[in-house]
Amino acid sequence: MAAFTSQALSSRAFSLRAFSPRVIVLCVAEARPVVLAVSAMRYLTGAALALPAVTVAVSLPRIAQGAAAWVLSILAIYLYNGVTDVTEDRINGSGRPIARGDLRTRTASAVAVGAGCLALLATWGLPAPMFWIVAANLVLGYLYSGPPVPLKDSSGGTVAVLCLSGLLSYLAGFTVATGGGGAALPAALVLFAGVAIGWMVFVGMPAKDLSDIAGDAAAGRRTLGVMLGERASRQVMVGAAVVLLAGFAAAVSLTQVRLPGVVPALAAGVVAVAVAASCSGGDGRRGTRRPYGAFMGTQHLLHLTAFLSWI
Image (tube, rainbow, N blue to C red):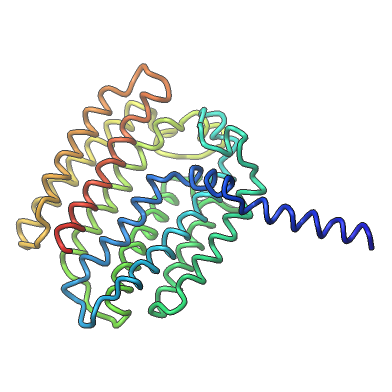
């Protein structure tokens, strides 16, 4: 009996420590604040670009509640990914909390489970489809990182998860803004979601791989960086960025969709990625991270521009 009580008290103490303020700060750092921020912006952009289809009064508290649910699901996914990536992150010299030993994998796993549960609970009172959107995102996150066959181990699996999760982010904002009433998707939202997901997949994925090639190879992954090498990955990334810009500019011109400022923002991003790619060699991990920084900065700029154009 005494042993059982001691074990119960120990488990309770662990659960309390897992949700201490310091641990939460470390977990947010592990999940990357810039990633959480752009995830929130995807959701909010989906809500803003849904306005032409809105037939009921938009509830700002509900929009905020939906944003909390979505970001909590992303926090859970990236925390679990950090737990499963610890070996290769250390090989790559990552400075995130789990890799440097400041955050235990057991603790991070507990917080990830808690964040996932809170994400589902946060959909209470929102349009019914929102629960299933968040649940589907959590499932995708597990399939990406978890056993038996993590989708992150292949380029095809990574592309599939990025595309589906990206679509769900915009759909989540659209669903909450429209009250889940089955409204038609506005053309502006369709076009913007298409180019933003394309930017994430064809530019962001190779940009991220540049600094992780050694660890990914050691883990047996077949990422673009591992298969093509660093130089070819840079070329693919820049070429894809140019093609996306040309295609998006043509589509906006032909359809006359109202997305003011988005094409110039994307053009600036293409230039930034090209410059970063050409200057990323010979400076270790810091140098290979420059294209990813340019990609991420462009993501934020694109979503902020699209969001502000419709609110």
